[in-house]
Image 1 (cartoon, helix red, strand yellow):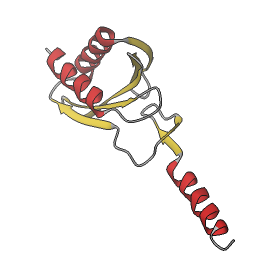
Image 2: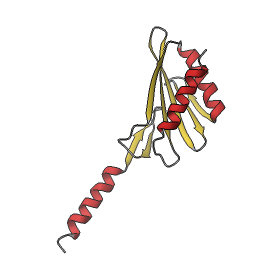
Image 3: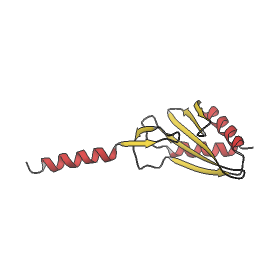
Image 4: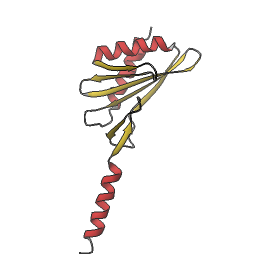
Length: 126
């Protein structure tokens, strides 16, 4: 009888701490496993518009672009069954920062796809 209450309390606390929400690059909250790395950040010596064109070309080649937010600089897409967000920011004179975030349909992190998309963006820069 003494072990039931601590076990129930521990399992409840474990469930609460392991489930949670993550913030996507476009600012939305999605249910997913928190405390997991799901982003790759790169910087390029290119103007933001050149980088945006390379991102669009890469995402259109790999999947379907679902939305483009010009105010926040985020382009969302679906690649296979994955959700992809790419944020383009101007960091300095002629330097752009690209952040690629990928989650699976079960909201798990997918750094392999994020890395692949990041490399393709770099190759599509002219």
